[in-house]
Image (tube, rainbow, N blue to C red; front, side, top):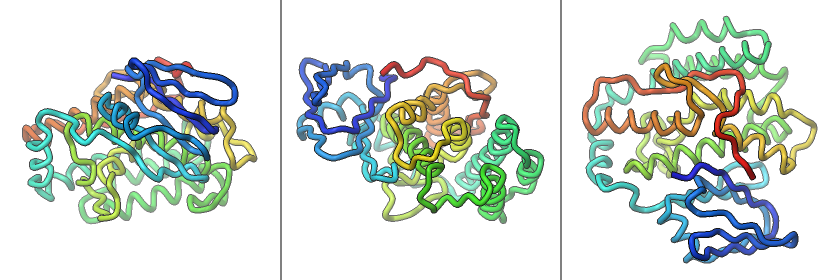
Length: 301
């Protein structure tokens, strides 16, 4: 399985030769083994690759994501056939009861809010205890309200006067970091045999990645930590800033009592979801608990 995140943000010609990705720019040629790649982030003009190269990337389970000028994802290219039991798992997704999905969603939101509380504490900001109080109040009747209220209060502590819809340096960093994690989750879902359109809670008919948008929720606070350390006045991110944000996949967290990096945590989470959905397992969904920023198996480029 690939472990590297590759970003391409300048004019480039991309070709695949003998299992190697060749990126030709004005600065020269860079070569990366396809087997090392987890995903490719693309944003900018005049970046060209062929449909055959896209097919080869998909065959090798490499996700390719395009971003707009606000670092929001506009498309993700993933393999069409991800797993031998793909059809069986997709049918199980459709047939899973509302009650089971609600149980999963409540667990996801409780961990999201808990991680927001821990993030404030790790960053040395006020509000951690206040945010943590919302966890105990989450139930089937008010889960969406609690999530919204906790998020509103959390971001008020995170940065005074901050608005997630504004175009500013903070949102540039959050958007980019969230996109990295979202793509990694979507890639793992498809590779495992899930159809990412069929969500646990999200059900937007125009969204091909509802399930990824469900599962990213407990990971957002990890991105928030990295972005908080990366804050500056520029909306357009520098190469080093983007590299640091992409590095979130290699930051440490705790899943099922074990310290792993985010990429491994995603694997563990999706595999546990497969058992719950496909095998009617009674186990809890394995979601991450955030830790202070610590690198595990870093990105090298």
